[in-house]
Every structure is written in C-alpha cells, then in structure tokens.
Image (cartoon, rainbow, N blue to C red; front, side, top):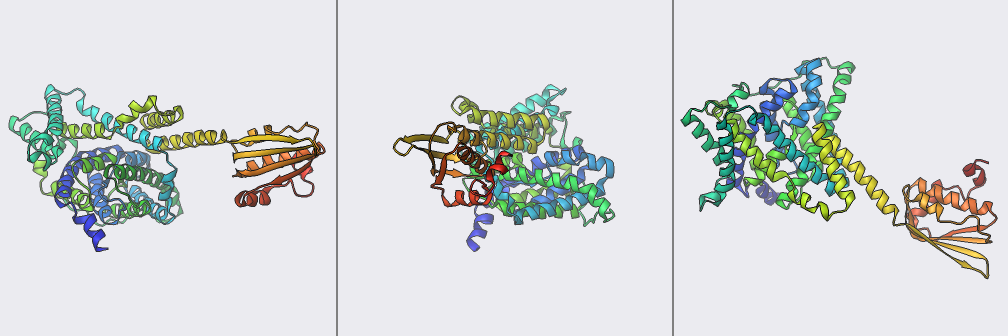
Length: 495
C-alpha cells in the first residue's frame, strides 16, 4: 500500500507539477469553449474541470490521465439546457455519476477487451483530426500576427527540448505559453486572448443541490441524457486509458476508473459543474510534458482554480495563438502516423474498420457512434473470418456402406450454412457417422444446423450416429437440440 502510494503520488514530483501547470493552462480556454457549446455560463465548465480533475486524482484508476469538462459530453447537453435549463443539467450530471458508479461495480470496464486495436487506432486518429479542426476558427479571418505567433509557438515546442541542459527540464509547451504571452504583452498586439473567450469566475464553487422537483417526471426528462452522458463518458475514458497505458507502458484499473468517473461527476454536479470525462488531448499533453502520477492530475485541477481566482489578470492576457500551437502539437502527437504507412501491409478488413471509425467520428462529432460502428464492423469481419476456418471431410466404408463425416473448426451462426451444405443427403448409404471431435458448437444456430443434418439423413433412410462432442458442445446440444428427441422431424421440418 505504502509503495503503491509513493509510486502514484511522489515518484515524479517535478515532472508532475510542471506538466500539471501546462495542462491547467490548456484547460481554461477549452472549458470555456465547452461551456459555450453546452449553452451554459463559462464558470460551469471551469468549476467542472476543477472538481473532476481534483476528485479523479484520488479515486481514478489511471494515474496521469486528465479528466475535465469535454466537448463530447457538452454536445449531448445542448438540448437539455435549451429546453429545461441549468438545474436539470445539474440533476442529469448527478444521475450520470450514479450510472457510471454502477458500471464500475458491474465491471463493465472489462468490456474494453472487445474493442479491437483497429477501432482504437481509428478513434485516436479521428480525435486528432477533431482537435485540429477545433483550432481552425482561431486561424480563420485573423491578422498575420496570429499565424506568426502560432508558427513561432510550434517552433518553440519542437525545438526547445534540444536546448542543452534546460531543454529536458522544463516542458516546452509551458515555455511556449509563457514566452508568447510575454511577446504579445510587450508588443501590445491586438490579437485574441483567453479573456476574449468569456468572463472568468471570481469565487470558489459552492455546494449546490439541483433545484428541480424530485419526481418521476423529472427522472423521465433527465434519464435519456444521463444514460447517453454515462456511455459516452465511460467510452472516452476507457479509450483514453488504453492510449495512456500504451504511452507509459503501464496498466490501469478500468473498473475503478468507471467508479472514479462517477464519483467525480457527482462531485461536479453538487458544486455547480457539468458532467465530464477523460480528455485524450489533455492527457497526451500531460504525458508528453513529463506527467506520470496522480500529482499531475491534482496539480492541473488546483492550479486551474488558482489561476482563475488569483492570476486572472495575467491569465486573460494569454494569446489564443499560443494555446492553438499547443493543441496542434497534441493533434500531431495523437495521430497514429504509422497507421497510414501500414495501410498497404494490414489486412483490408482492418483498414476498413479503422477508416470507418475515423469517418463516422469526424462526420458526427460523436465518439460513441464511431466506436460502435467500428466494433460492429470488426465483429462482423471476425465472424466471417472464423467461419471460413470450418471444414467437413468424408470417407466411405464400402463394406458396411457407411459414410463418415469429420467436422473440423468452429460451428456458429456464420458457418452454419456451410456446415449443412457439406453433407450429401441424397447419397444412398445405410449408415452415417458425424465425427465432431475436432469441432466446437457455439450457439443455437449451430445446434439447429446439426439437427437439420441428422433429421434429413434419417428422412432419407440412413442411421445416423453423432460422436466426439466435447463437453461444452454436448451441453448446448443436449439443451437445445431436438434430433434425439421424439417427433423431431415434425418439430424441425414442419410436417
């Protein structure tokens, strides 16, 4: 316990503190922007980002991952806020947290093992594209100063690490933000700043119980939104955990993360914030800036609030061009460039799954839709591929006029038709032996195919013997099969 505590909190103090500051600076404009998307006051997103980051630092299952208000969640809140107002959003946030805690106890985080690598790659690439697209409004219809500062910021981000001695000590995104702010203030440039995004709060968040009637009608209003927020939040959090696992070569507790996200959202709702989840962009910034432990997440949340309340006069001077440069760096670093190079080497099905995931996410701006499309496609391709690994061979014993069929492979809904088509029901034989010692039956579709084969042979006058069923296959055949039960022909063939 003590070793785990030291590892999670104090094994990388300098790196965690510095990276947390960088993340906090990048969180502010995004939290404000996401509040605007959801149709609420900017302080709602800022309070949410502070609350979620601080709480998840203690209760989350993935050290070094950043959670806060996100665009994916904000998009789902628009209609609720527009039709019913902020108080119903706070109530929906609380119910979202309850759903996520329940998902953690039901161990739904383990379902991530069903998400293929091609879906994760597509998800990452789509998010990188969305992050880049989100910066375009800041680069449209602006003066040349903005382009110059953005380009200079990118130069600092990528070149500063090569500076001897200090290059590896200070995160280059932090250097970019501080230096670009200093230049903008010194030259008095008329460019868009954080202060132009919206008014910053000037008080600490307070306990706020949602002012809504607690009845069935309210539940019916918030239930669909809470369910959607819970699913999207957990999906993005689990995908982010997978990416951070890969970046840090460590493992995370997915089910604890589900519970942690739920607790954090309940805390956010009770302090006047909106629902949130893990942020891939900010998590990548944290990891790239040297953050690894829970201290980095806590620092991001605490420093965010400190900056908003204490350093607001300096904070509003940060040029958006500097933060755009940081987010472009995140976009470039997030995108899996090897996936483009590997398109010619990977199987066509893998490429299709990856590309469809990217297209759906980018087209809908909904991460859940893209992942769902990718998982469904991957499942279909997998079922089709496994179905091809089933084969039936046969040999005839002329002395006893017995045809022996040997089935090899997996028999389930995808291969059941091929299984049935492999038998010659019109052959004039006295006995048929179906050897299943090398086969496995997975579902009732496979059992139905076996029933049909046995009964068709018997209808043609042959004696049929089924041998070699393994224990699992025998269990499902005994339970759902009808070929060895009275009146089987009538039941199956409809006569």
